[in-house]
Amino acid sequence: MSRAQIIKELKKKNPELNQKESEEILNLFCECIEKALLDNRNIELRGFGTLFIRKINEKYSAVNPKTGQLIYVPKKNKIRFKASKKLKELINR
Image 1 (cartoon, rainbow, N blue to C red):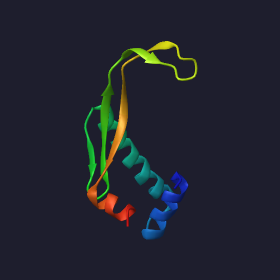
Image 2 (cartoon, rainbow, N blue to C red):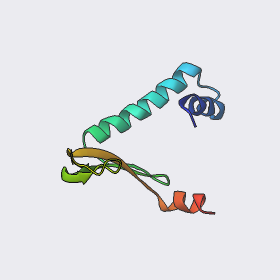
Image 3 (cartoon, rainbow, N blue to C red):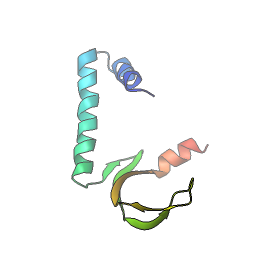
Image 4 (cartoon, one colour):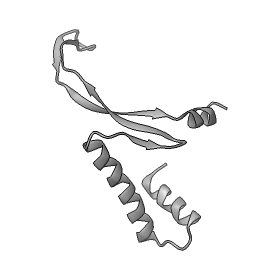
């Protein structure tokens, strides 16, 4: 689902909102998630799942699968998502 489709769906469920207000709500939601992740906090959306940062350590002896060469991979942060039990049950019906 694209950003435009989400805004359209938000407008459909709340007809009193105009296009600009719907966009502002979605932008605020995304900004709050970004800010929390930058502050290294977990985001828990009950009934949906949890977004969190996982620190990946550096690797000195990783292998490039294409060439077989040893390469260095610097440490980094990755965003992970863990689906809630309710979402898992809904998807696996």
